[in-house]
Image 1 (cartoon, rainbow, N blue to C red):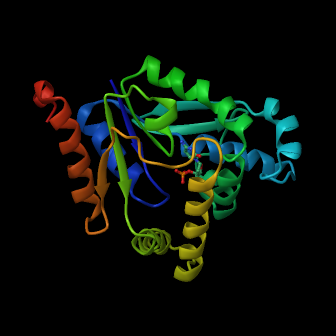
Image 2 (spheres, rainbow, N blue to C red):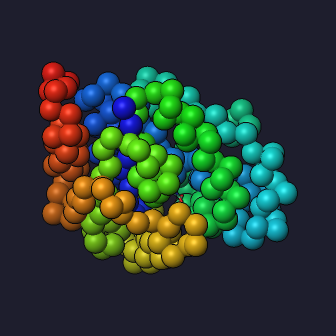
Amino acid sequence: MNIAIDGPAGAGKSTAAKAAAKRFGIIYVDTGALYRATGLYMLRCGADPGDPDEVLPLLNEVHITLRFEDGAQHIYLNGEDVSTEIRLPEASSASSAVSAIPEVREFLLDLQRDIAKKNDCIMDGRDIGTVVLPDAQVKIFVTATAEIRAKRRYDEYIGKGMDADYDEILEAIKQRDYNDSHRAVAPLRQADDAVYLDTTEMNAEQEADAVCDIIIARFPERMQWT
Ligand code: DC
């Protein structure tokens, strides 16, 4: 069973997907982490993550492994656990830049499909329902206004004791929305057969419940999951 969740940055996909994965006993796969690790590698090499001429020669040096430890995804870049470092704002921008390069998307595609083939999973990203898993049994497109998504990110940083500037976060979110939905290959868009979920008025728990309800509605025979 494969469940695809797509949507813009900060829509709450990962929180809802993690909760659903736990509830249904399947794994959660965060595909954004793959782009983040690739972007991080380019930064570490001093390459411009948006320039194919600089990125492509380095791609064959990128070896990414996902491991699922205690239900959580850990991402290893050339053997090093970079699960925390890929969350830094520089890695966010770099991930969006490398994700616009078709060869990078192609490079990460097999890895994503292979995981989905071997595991019952809920996978989140931008193009899971449209490109990576077009045959997923459930597709959900999660979104919310840019302002509320920026507010959630701001609260998250403050909650972790980090410095944060709301206007900067909002600007970065709008920039990433633009990049992710305007790139030529596999842009962010709702699959025709995806359920649309606007979470602007929802808190994290309500969003997780809404996602689980959509899954249960698709698989009523597996109600014993709940
Ligand atoms: O979900 P995230 O914010 O961690 O994703 C980081 C970047 O990776 C995002 O700006 C776009 C890109 N991405 C993508 O192009 N396709 C995916 N399936 C997942 C992420």
